[in-house]
Length: 639
Image (cartoon, rainbow, N blue to C red; front, side):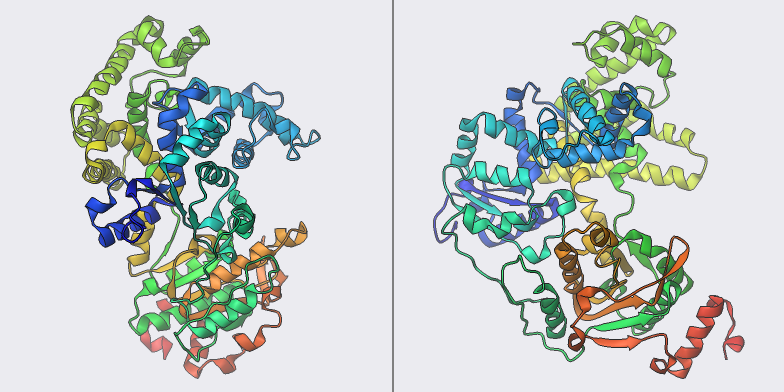
């Protein structure tokens, strides 16, 4: 576009779903064109684009431009407050209500519209509670001058709907739109794209409807299936050559996915030839399954392969416990993608809260979090004195600033706190971001606070290192964004990264480390491994029992199975148990319907029979199965 069509880079908008993908694409474009020729090109995520637009336009909706972005914990805190004022509020789980509000926003349904939609059932107590809490929640967000993650697109679309001239402005600014992973777009993302193409139809999307597996997040597969209807005359280019998997793996994958009726017709092929068909192992039960997996991976380990090229994939996290037990027993290093995120750690959330309040003193939830961190002797009783005395149009911070005497003997502590916030607003204007953060940590004596909070030296050291890592993150941010490395932009970027990506960088490190990777099928999308063990190719797991018992369309479950199959480059192993322990009971199991009629495309091996094992393997299996203590026996006992 830039080189051949002489299009101005400033007119190009390229959108992806994750910061990781956006960064990688930007690096590739720069490597092709050079920095000078890519200057002004906009390549970012949907949510980063939304924040950029809201920073300019959100005042139309009555917010200030320095709004905060609340995370899940902040949202649950507001919902908890709302349930206190709702009749029978204690009966309701705030997580479910938060999920319903998120669902509604991802379908662009406002709190006023909800009761008049097909999603509302007046006989459903949760819907009645959600109707009340949704309104309460939005009022509180506005009062705090805050939005949540779903609001980023929800409010951007609302602005475009209410002020079409704004949509026209951005459509004329971005004359060429490109969208990655289009099959994962939801309603607000689709409406955002429609608004941005309102003055032209210069749009190019990339996607694979066979990998649409995120409907539970609001993704709508019809966006890609109906693309030509929405944009008449669109040209479709099929990219059918696969560069990852061997021909035998692709043959099975093609046979599985073509059973879905609503899909764009395509058949993957590859130049990568193999005679090794995928293998389906039949196991005795859950314990046997985990023992065989550990035994087979031990053999691979003995050949010297890099363990990061091995993955165990499963439908649900509930399947991991017996597998982990056997990996530990066999001393096989492993990692599970999706552990506790860096920005979920208390010490990091404390510092983020300080930065958020310095940026936006109206952010009441962040303010409440840090009012007594480090300990200032300001408890709930003192806080309630301020809350009880305020009028509707006063923020908590303004009350603390104007009437510190309400704190009684704690007056000086309140004055010191507000003075600290005010002074650091100036500090972050005058000093670089990393220096400002280091000064804040020093002023708070935060390292000393950590030492007082934790008894175990190892925990103290770990938490101090986490704080240092946050300072490092500001330095990386400054290096990357240079003159745009302001406090406001850093907090926005940090919260978007936390909410959106499950710490991509950590997961990358886990994949590169010499450990096998355990993850759900949903998490595996986009990754690839030489050896893939797909655990539980059974009815009730794939397809999931809910999709069967509730009579749902199982086409997405089949797409999930397809995604799992196509993660394998060289070898694919699938497992089925004759019995599986479910809620403590052994339940008979049967192969997945997705494998029905596919027998010629995979090789079956019944691992419950010893003829598939050498005499030495048979002995190892028996010893493991009956005692689980093989690693404790000395060499003489083994022989």
